[in-house]
Amino acid sequence: MRVYKDLELVEQLGSGVPRILQNYGKECFKFMDSFTRMIFPISEKVTEQVKTLIAVFQNEHSRNDIMDLLGLTHREHFRTEYLQRSIDLGLVEPTIPDKPKSSKQKYRLMEIGKQIG
Image (cartoon, rainbow, N blue to C red; front, side):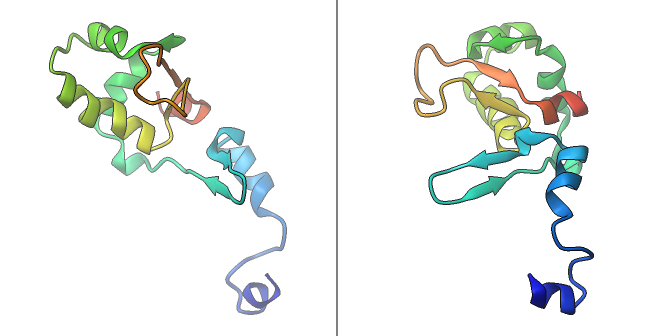
C-alpha cells in the first residue's frame, strides 16, 4: 500500500472500507475461505428488466413466484434477462447459494438492490 500512496494512487491508507460501508453497505462484501470479494452495483448496467424485477421484491420469492408477479412465462428469458443479471450485479442473491438448482431455492433483494429500487 505504501507504494500506491507514494504514487498518489490512493488518497489515504485505510479509508476505503469505511467509505464502502457508508455508500454501499456490508452486503457488497463476500467472504470466501482464502479471499474477500467486493461486488459493487453499476447503475449503467441496470436494465429496465432488472429494475422491474427489483420493484416486485418484498421478502423471499421462488423463481415461479417472481415470474408470476412480473407476468412472465418464458423461463429462459426470465432467467437470463431478469434473474441472472440481477444476481451478477449483486442486487439479488439466492437463499441457497451452494445449490442453485434446488427446488427449494428462493431469492432475496440485497441491501444494494434496495437502494436502486
